[in-house]
Length: 139
Image (cartoon, rainbow, N blue to C red; front, side, top):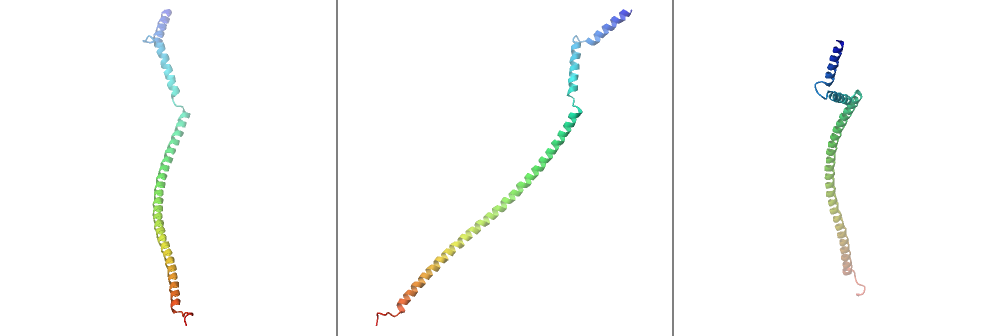
């Protein structure tokens, strides 16, 4: 009787390891292998802490990028104002330059006219001197 029980136990054992499927041992091996890979791929506590530090660094970088973008916008607005100011000053400088060129031309004309007046005055004096001065040759 003991032998019969042992045979039934062996039969049950062989059926449970093989199962209903003819490749039961191979299937259980693959399931065990897949489960072990799954466990190996689960993140450990150190990789989770690394992920959280990387996440914090990413958030800081995003915040810094936003700050830089706002600074760039402010800088571009300030640069536009500087360009406007410079353009208005440049226009004023051009007007002043034209005015100074006109003044310089008027001064040149004035100097030429004064020289011409002096020449004419000298000529008139010479003619008056000739007209009104008594000639020594005439008795």
